[in-house]
Length: 179
Image (cartoon, rainbow, N blue to C red):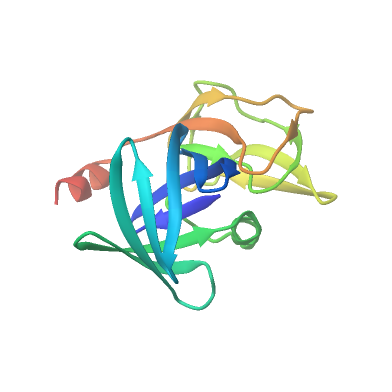
């Protein structure tokens, strides 16, 4: 699933859970942690011999939280695959990420691009069939296709990385990054 922590977007996947032992992948890197709820909303987390405490306060929709850890507070929003799929279907523009990830299981129908292709905002990069509907995924910013990790006809799973992109640096983006 995708989570937003402040302005950062991360992909997180639960790989296994046995009692308090949790193995997860965060942006492709695996972590083994021990998580125990101390009281309602307060958790103790052990990782690499270090102990952390975190307090989670839900906004009521069970997808948005305030997380207090140490002396810092973070706004965390969970984007489930269904919400991400609906957002993509509505055509809501988001900041272009450096990857295209499937929001749900399906089948690759068409990949009208190749590695190295330079794309402009609005170009279609992949067509997926899911729930008997074909969905075209388009980039929302200029970029280059870095790597294609699936083939036409492949069955794909939810949250599967399909295409890596390299975002084109525009003078405006560079200027904003310096401010």
